[in-house]
Length: 148
Image (cartoon, rainbow, N blue to C red):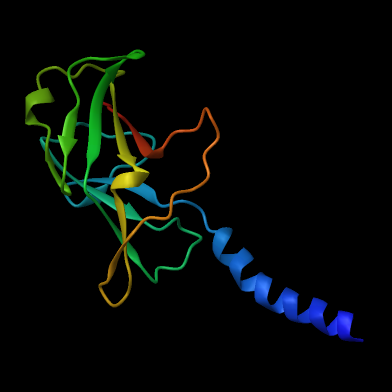
């Protein structure tokens, strides 16, 4: 009887933790003219806003900020020019306007170490680092296909 009670108590404690760990990683969004850039692509805008949100299936009890993001203009498989580093949500891409050709893309990358979780009460906390495999990325990214 005591073993059964212990097993039930252990399950009661473990279940909420399992539900929290099942939540997907946050996602990077790019906004141009206050509209989210779809994964299928959009034309380049001279100024964009970066946003990190909880995954759609996760509760919105907290928000995210970042201290560093890297934007890279890519043609084929290679960077076309040096990356732009942003330490806030507003990014000026006007220098790339004359360089873009059909088929180019912008890769936006936010390292886990630069993510901050902001609780509902406004308290910032470092983002809990997920366990990474050797070939995993160490952050979250977004591929923006540039269309005419």
